Length: 448
Image (cartoon, rainbow, N blue to C red; front, top):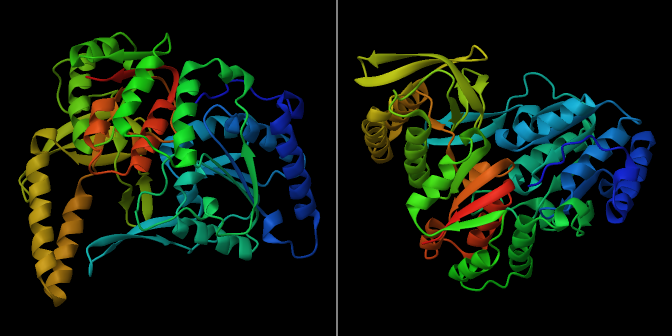
């Protein structure tokens, strides 16, 4: 992801292929918004897709600027809070609102005490805000359930036009049983594809590398994943480095400002390990939580029907106090954020014990029947929601990093290779593609 840092100066700032798309979309949207008759879905639902370096974000910014001449009732949304952090900057420049798509659609997670599962439902006590144009960025992550909610609002005319923007080579909805309806030709829409690498990115070696990987994804013809080691090593330059030893990998990490970098991997266990080591490098020996440190939420934090913190939301600690829960025999932290919100989280030293308690309750609930089963699942969710699952932000899974952008990205290629017997080649190539394309300045790859 190579974000543009300047506000576009209208259609004249686009290259030829971008301009053709913009002019066609603007014309169709204007006719749709001015029509007093029913309009076909092909003229209400649009998809702009393109790989890294094709200028999707730049084109989106231009479209928003031009569409403001037609309507002010626009909303920019994303499926994740990580992507929203990038989208907010664009929205602020054009004085429109930005939200997660879940927030806009008034979605919330509901605990099912009968099955022990979490379900995404809409809370429609208050009507959804009508918009003329809804942009949904990072649309590869939109699953069928989310799309159906959007489609319902299209049918209700709450949303008049929706524009999906994304890269179909990136990671798709997490559930294996789910599909992304936008890229499967399952719905009527007008689709535009950006294929030309923008002038600013043509000489970028990272873009050149991810373009080669994208070609494998597009063709669906994958060589053995470990052959990507050769491709990466052949791409080594000022923007791409390879470390053969973990000590060298860590040394490179310590040479840059940790606030400008991220360590990207696949497994949560790897994230925890890298977070622990990186935190030691950056902060030394300190308590589990300290003021001014950044933390990321691994799940949404709800208090009743109100969402206090979103899944994948990053907060800064304003103050913290270590406490003890006598009932559950757990050490925990009471944290106040710089936005004056509050939450509790289990102390790192007690996490294993806490998770074992949850696991024991879950096992008992799975075996139980009737009211006993319901009571156990209720106990499980009450204990789980008493403490918020948060992580440090020095490392993250590639899945959760999608939509973000970082000057320096550190990737553990060996971990991905170790997953070759557990993940499809399509998944592995998409993970590598997304991981590499998060870097805006430099990528450092650990290859033994």
